[in-house]
Length: 233
Figure 1 (cartoon, one colour):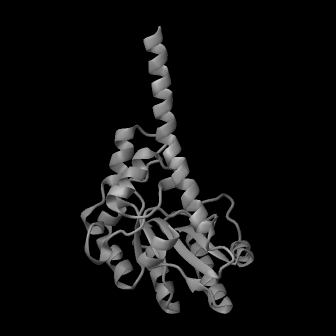
Figure 2: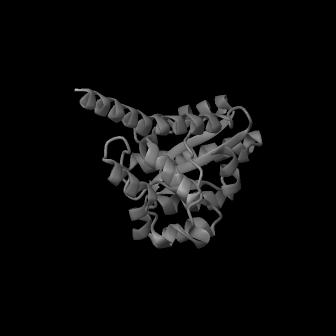
Figure 3: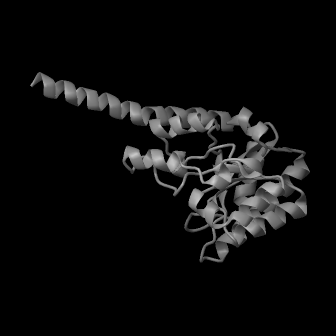
């Protein structure tokens, strides 16, 4: 009976540690991201790409305004679109890591969680396309996620405002921009994967455009380089 009780207690402690380390890492990353609020600093970020459609349209828009952003790439998608990855880096944007297949780290077994966090594709391991910052899928992390980022030697980044481009119904661009204006900056989360709903890429592009215009109008700094993220993330 004592053995069973000790086993249960041990499992409970391990489970708490497994999830608790991830929760603590998320709390700290959120706190660092919030340091941008009210300081006239803006980070425009995109998750779940790259895609041959929307990512290239975003890059065209950023090039038009001579603005820079950070792209958190899914490993399998990066492998399928190497030319887009190379363009992101060549045009001065930061390449981020968003896991191999975008698994929710709380809903898979530890082995799958570890493999999804640690297995960078070759294109993101070295050279100009190396991933220099990590964003957890769904914002969920565990002990192994955090350990993987330490071994990869890349900081963890979260966000201060999701744009809502995955919501139903979509918010208005005006509401997102107004919120960032009220916050005085922050880290905006958008998505650059190709989708069947034509309203969503239009929303992402117009929100990006208006955020850049707001930052320029207010004289804000863009946070986008690995050096920036090392301080914020």
